[in-house]
Image (cartoon, rainbow, N blue to C red; front, side, top):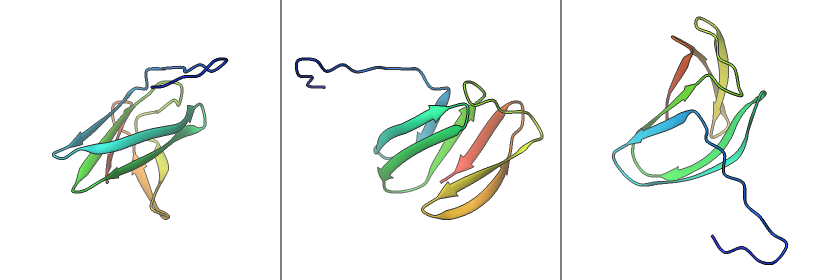
Length: 85
């Protein structure tokens, strides 16, 4: 990361992991109490696993997920969302 004068960067741990067999470029745009917004670029199958954190997840609850403009509903189990990409 190349920072200039009067610039700074903030690194915050996000309770998410990405399982994939090939490299993926990842950019987290936002992660807060309203949800996670990330941009992923790669090839092949991947699975995003998101644990409860700033965005609270509740086992048995359903959450709306949008991937490339297509919406789906995913149900949390054990305070974890598993999202196939």
